[in-house]
Amino acid sequence: MWEFTSPKTIIIGEDALEYLKTIEGEKALIVTDKVIRSLGFVDKVESYLREAGLETKVYDEVEPEPVTENVFRGVEVARQYNPDWFIGLGGGSCIDTAKAIWVLYERPDIRIDEINPLTKLGLRRKAKLIAIPTTSGSGSEASWAIVITDVKEKRKMELASREVVADIVILDPSLPSTMPPRLVADTGVDALVNAMEGYISTWRNYLSDIHAISAIKTIFKYLPRAYRNRSDREAVEKMHYAAMLAGLAFSNSQICIGHAMGHAIGALFKVPHGRTIASVLITTIEYNLSEALDRYAEIAEEIGVRDDSKEKTVEKFIQVLRKFLIELDEPVTIRDIGLSWQKVQESLDDLVERAMMSTGTVANPRTPTAEDYRKLFIYAFEGRRVDF
Ligand SMILES: [Fe+2]
Image (cartoon, rainbow, N blue to C red):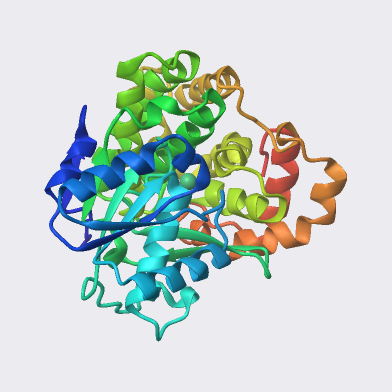
């Protein structure tokens, strides 16, 4: 038996943001960051909400790769303001932070690390959530996952609850059209790995598969176009929807070891999430082949890569994927991120420990031991072919 959780209402297409004019309520707290504010999106959201008769307040202190302090400070603001709507406006960082603030606002009795699928939260007594992504990547708008960094422990907390799925998602393609190309590639690759890992995870199911494959096909087709030409409106729009599909896929299946390793690197070295998972992607595929050859071959065939055997098909697919990442100026090894071997070697124990603790390890098709992870980080550093 599988449970598929998704947002209740999803608004897509040109002028989707205007849906805010129809929201019923009293007070909305907009959770965002200073860059989004400077782009004028916050003003637009506020004006539509006011047209709907709501009061608004802005909390714009979310940082990229958000930390617990960003959440705690937002909870204070929320408790003073008493909103009945939270608006997560921005990339995954802003939406994740909005989710976490919302939980702690409704449940002052729990700790942030208690947000997990086993805790009954009983949300929506005080407020509901609208997610408005401005990037096309994390899928946070559609997922029930939250990633927040605990600075003291230099750890990325992978929090989750089916209750934190947004009530309303607004996908307005005019918002991601302002992203700089670097961000387009970094977030787009995140969406790709979210979908691919959702497809190979042992927790995959019929419904997560449909969303994963659709996202993968769309991303292969449109991400290079959206990266090269920001005025390619079709590509920008399709990428925005694909990121959401990938969010539905992985959050109703599971992330795998690419995310386990990527989160470990990101927590220790503060590298953008998309780049960390890009840097280990090929190594993790090679490692998983003994258990997931069929699944990778299916992905390959869906994007039109075929050969006379599954082994050869996947071999070809890995070459296509490498070219795809290079075309997007994404790292294909850990070294490409700009980390030195000395730095990685010094942190190896730490990296392995963090990866072992990640939820990405649980439902990976092949279960890595600590020794496997040690080798995976070493092999991924220079892109050496996995032979174990
Ligand atoms: Fe991700």
